[in-house]
Length: 590
Image (cartoon, rainbow, N blue to C red):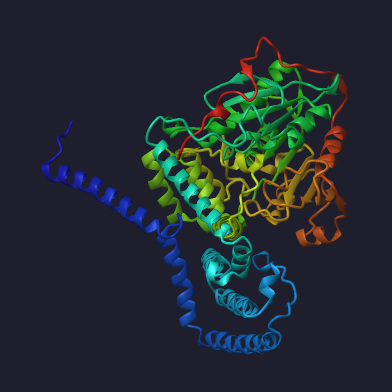
């Protein structure tokens, strides 16, 4: 073995030191740009600035727009000043919904801000920019303008002042109490992450308040627990239903309280339901990859269901990233000749993307340099922390989840109306370093699944091979999986698709139990070889239905089932423990 020369040793040590310095520097800069790579942000605004400097005609047009906007604002301000105690028209913007915003002088403050907001959003748009850079500039311009809203400060928010006077200052005291309490909780969580002190209990305890549908864990490996739920009917449909939840969240979003548990609803409709519960990873799982999640997770669960129920056909459902996993597995199974796995009788995808060319607001965080920053961060821990993911999702919808939340809780002194979904949302999960890196690189950055380039067990998979009928569900206000992006499944498959566009967002639109008020959805069916219908044309023509889309889904599953059999109870031979199992209980302070 060749011995290293002194110069080689020095260079090796210098290389290690330089990497540490770079990582520390990148982390310091990233703290100024809410987790986004500062280089990515700088490149985006450099692109915007270069086009702005070289477009004198565009600058002239924006100056003209500014003068026009100022003229309109002054005219309206003058009109409002003539009737200072009369209410202006109501505003649809929730930040200015309170009637005090319609009275002078706050009507002037609101009017000036909204005029400025509109102008700045126009300035962010310049022809010729790289699409990703344009997306980043649009996103951060919106975040900056939202942060400058007069509704965010007590001095310029008349609702805050009115409530403070009416409560004789108690709202201010309560707001300060809420702030100190939340600050204390945040400091305590950081302390807990450094020792073995038990974590702060969740408002809704898992296995006691939520995730209480009866069942047994019938299989367990290093990555998943497989839960089979106990039947509540004497007869069940012959084809069991396997649910593949996202691994970036705890599975019990689909099994919350009894009144809004999707699992309980399905069981009561006569389905044999199986649920994958993903392990919440630690640093020892840093090398677990995307293929492991597919083989040891989705495919292994399917194999166990066939072995233990002796069934040859199963229904399948995947939610969010779990739906992406399921679509990959389904495409692979369509080309596989092995008898280890059952045939998929149907496939349901909930808020799941298969084409990532338009990933919505998440695309702001996806480029080569941003992934480099993530790799540097995960290299130290071996995982992406749940708090990092939670902060990123909050930042995507900062107006509601940060600014409006702060106004309500700290300025108006209102307590949060806690519910089971908010408790679940605080139950963070991690992602292994390798899996998260492969997921973002292969699917988001290179769009390998949609382009037929992704390989599972050395076999290239294409969604075009799927023959099972599909129901694809998306939601109108989904910031994570935009519905038009989800709709692109029509371009990637050649099978019957029933598409549902439900009201609500990524989570609340999916958890839309029967009886939930103000729920509606659109539904339409496209048969095999029908051809392409544009998403907007589909939305214009698809009929709207009041109520929960769960009813239509249950009916669709029944139509794609063969017959009924005697209810299946979890085998005592294979039962390892009661649901919800052990993996879902693992929590971390980070």
